[in-house]
Each structure stands twice: as structure tokens, then as C-alpha cells.
Image (spheres, rainbow, N blue to C red):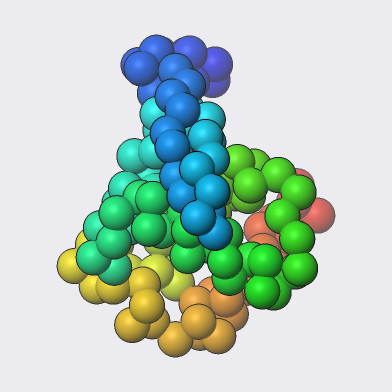
Length: 125
């Protein structure tokens, strides 16, 4: 099992910092290259740059939650959820379909179904 994971290209888990403006303040965000690649795919789907996507996510998170404690971790979770939602069918794998065009409630419903389905398999095992 471990061979599948340890054979990853080391470039994927090398960290890289990028500068992003959040509310007019230059901020450095450090993530592994794999996460930057996923963020680039997400941003490209909606005709944005990664800094624009990060700013949009930050602003909407602040609006929804009132504060952001660990934005880098939030971005990693966004990447994981994006990939999981593609696997569950909530987000089409066709990268030409913008995420903004999707029905958010329908996407979230597929996530809930995937979690319920996974939970049933865990209990049965």
C-alpha cells in the first residue's frame, strides 16, 4: 500500500509560498505544489487566476464565518473537497464547466450522499 504513496513525485509535496492580496494587504500563503495545481484548475474553470480565487474564497469565508483562523488549511480542504466532489459526481470532471454555473445545493447533496455511503461501508466492514 505505501508504495502507491511514497512513489509520488517529490515536486508534488514541495512547499511554495505565493503572494496574494487579501483586502488590499499582501499576504504570503505557503502550500504544497499539488494544492497549487488543484487551485489553478479550480480558478481556471471560472476564468480566474489563483490569487483572484484565493481572494474570493477569503472574502466569502469572512462573510460566512466572520473570521479566518487558518486560511492555508482551509485551501487544502477546498482542494480535497473539490477532488472528492468530482469523484462523487457533484462537480463534473469536464473542466470547461465553470463551478459558478453549478447548483451549489445539488453539489452539496452529492457530498452528503457520499459521506453517508462511506459511513455505511465503514460500519459494515
